[in-house]
Amino acid sequence: MAYVVDDKCIMCKHTTCITVCPVDCFYEGENMLVINPEECIDCGVCEPECPEDAIYATNDAEDKWYQHNLYFAKEWPNIVDEKDPMPEYEKYSAVENKTHLFSKNPAK
Image (cartoon, rainbow, N blue to C red; front, side):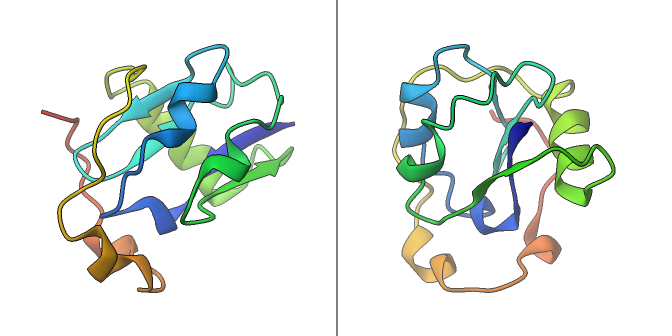
């Protein structure tokens, strides 16, 4: 079992979840965070920290978001320090299905 991040994180990128991760398995894109499911130890401490409910557990390696997290965790830089959420995150918090807003770019 591993935890992964879904599209609810896009354009919000709260980082409270990363500060509790004991294995530093979060990676940062331009407008989203991901978890490397191969590094995740299934402790679950990140899930309740996400104010967007964007983190969930899965043991399905074929899951869309599992694959997304795995791919981008290998492309983006590791993040271990808390940062402010994205500007205007409140505007995007209630938006459903934000995949069209996703950026493949790593964090700057």
